[in-house]
Image (cartoon, rainbow, N blue to C red):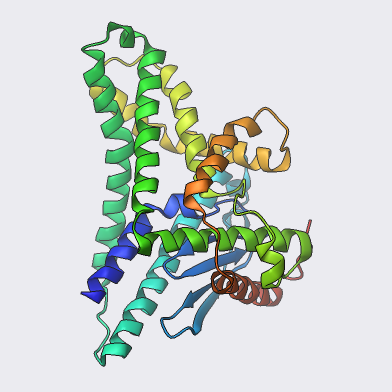
Length: 328
């Protein structure tokens, strides 16, 4: 039973993956995982997981930016897709590591052999997660708006139709992130998410922080994946409204085809607003910061310690393979 509970926590964390990670090519970023934090620098990443016995286990690897492999992957509106793709892949690997540590700890306590999660099972999980995202945030809102259109003639207006579609999408997302926060095991991920944000903030101001320094900072960070997803949902309303497609499946195809385009634009807006906090574009990221009241929670010192250990590991590897970092 404990094994299945651990696997369920992993599965739910995959559905939260885009909301829990920072996908920008920046000095440091990270992601909350089950009972731990992953931190990455430009050329390295590391993860620290708190085991049931209180010990922290870590893993670190080197990392190459997409723009360093191919210069054109660093061009505006292309760099967003490349960076986000790498962030999703890295987030999946980090989540898998946290699952392996959790299963091994349970097996050790019970004197059994830890079950192995095969590659095909992981592939099925990832495919299901993508399918869940498309179904929940593309198909269902469109179906709901189409159904309401039969009863409200005003929805024949393309902008109003997409406004309702967008409202349903945002409501579903809010309901999901709030609903799973009611489960104690999942809410702990939100606490680790807060630990990651505090540690990144402290590092950007002081360099490598201690627990007390990190705890002094906010859990709300403008580069968070939560802000990114909310920005995407807001932009979707205006982009879809610009194309007066009439059929249901035509509208659905539009939502799939334009997903990478909207993600690229959202990435650039988040990047710009992080550097220009008082710009008009920064206003579009405000709802994402408000939403972090749910997806980030005040962490304990132990949880902040995990984030700092992960950051230390990443920075040590960064120094060996990426050279000296200068904090802006």
